Image (tube, rainbow, N blue to C red):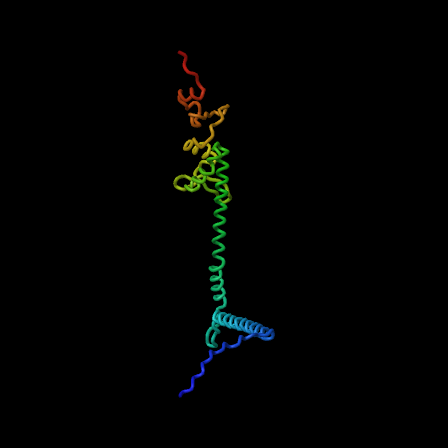
Length: 214
């Protein structure tokens, strides 16, 4: 008769590993040393890369049989490259700023002159900007306001006359009605014309003439 087989016992789980304070301190010390070594390796690699880059950038040494290097040529080349990479963008930005400042001065001076010569202040800014965009107004080298004709040439009329007479005739609605007290001009339906140029109907509307008696 075969003897009974004893039951197989289950494997017991491994005991849970515990760490002492000394073990933890050792792990932290090892980790700190590993990080320090990593930083040293990175710094050394960076030094090698910088040295290789500097070496490749230097001009090749002249051979004994070769003519001496033209240092001025290299200096001019490096100066040109540096100017193109560093100074050119700065100059471009500076030129843009100067042009914007010049445009602001042009618009401000022209708008002020337009108001002084009868234009309604609420219209002055927009009307002047349109004139500048069309190339009708500009500044001289010393900052004086000037007027240009349709061909872009400097016109003979002064800016004061341009705003006082020429532009007033083109856009009378953006101008204030002239003072009728001894100014020689009449507002309202006359559109800024002299009283002598008005029709009989316009004079009656302005009170400059009476209706004929019946």
